Length: 181
Image (cartoon, rainbow, N blue to C red; front, top):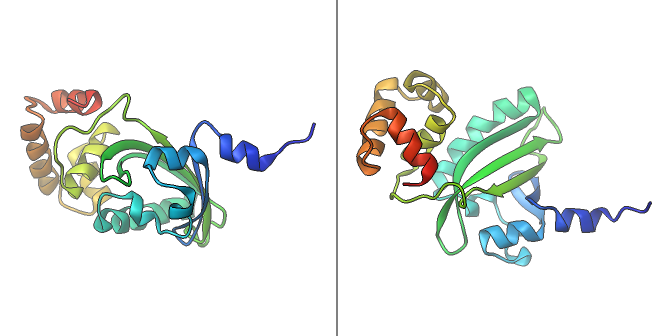
């Protein structure tokens, strides 16, 4: 059986991106549809254009590098940004092709989670990072270690999230984040 790998890549049911030094060198149709941009616009661009802020792009890149270096792969749920500025929850998973230099080249998949989880409140970059880790089930201390901030600072962000989502408990906040409410 002849396999047309280009067709398989382009028609995959998830967004796929090939990267070199955190720059998109190829992407499939699903990525273009998900982010609302043509292939011509995305190819050659830094992944930064898909993030809500440059700061989040830098922090996540620094956070991912030692994990990619150790394991060769990385995955999380995070808030990303479409070309029209709309933010949405996205599952991102990737593999470094060279673990010694994990950002040198890789393959990344993107799955739009907005049908299951919507972003309703206006959140800062740090609030988005704390929210994503709360959804992973991490404690304030674990989130603090992951984000390299104190657990007390995490608790301040969690309190802000609880106010924004009108949540009475941490469990209620997680439920509302999951439900998008």
